[in-house]
Figure 1 (cartoon, protein in one colour):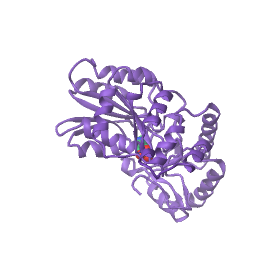
Figure 2 (cartoon, protein in one colour):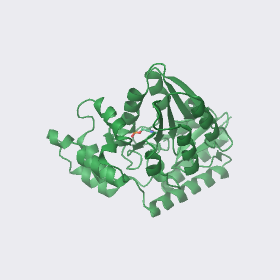
Figure 3 (cartoon, protein in one colour):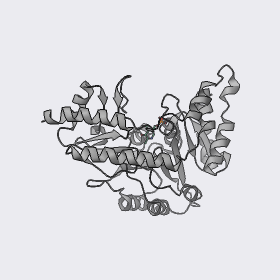
Figure 4 (cartoon, protein in one colour):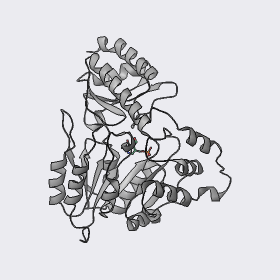
Length: 343
Ligand SMILES: Cc1ncc(COP(=O)(O)O)c(C=O)c1O
């Protein structure tokens, strides 16, 4: 599958879901959802709940069918033929695909190994040089796992210039993996500039990709433009119910647990001669070299789904999700069987 996702019954380390699984509160609320009335499709209470959770006005929030719908609406309203999209790469391919579909020109500033530090200075220069622009950053970034420091986010917003100017210049921050990061993003401060729109997937945090749920936080005028473009009833009753019970923050014990599992994964990979890169997220970008594709193919023969990173422009890399210890042990056992066979 283009975005990862293994068949049922496989060990899937190719998608980056919360390794702690579906929160009990979400499971319970979704199990009791009514879906026999149009009234079940009213998102307003869920939007008020998410707005309160984020500390913003309800008019700043739009509930969407996953982060995917949020990104599509933003590209469709804010980009047009001849417009410019600037992307912090290597990253999630949807930003470029949606920008191209909108007819915009796409430019990328790429982080490079070793370390894949976010290319902040290059982005800043590109933002200062360009006129109207929609810039996309994924923070923490998929697939590198690197997060932008608060000071770097501020530099990018400063480079967008004066919010009062008539130039349409916007920074889209995809925070889909932010709850797993070791630091919090200064999101309230960034939103207050009026030049930032935040996209959040709940499908990763709630480990519920089958419930298509995410949301946008942005300037109310932008949010109402996005709203005006939608089909009727775009978000299903189960997603609305899940959003009404969701909170964006993972408690400290959960984050500590995930960090420990991430460290154990990195140690186990290094012990096997692989090279995981530093990550603050619930996944690791791992340098394998020319055998990366063969590793993914051999793992698939053993029903383990690993994400090959060729379509991020990184053919010598794979991405591995942080999973609980029993799953991690299965992954290591499969790697122990495969690695000696690789070219
Ligand atoms: C960075 C990023 N943003 C957005 C999405 C889409 O999320 P959703 O399932 O909420 O549509 C993904 C899915 O992999 C992703 O990796």
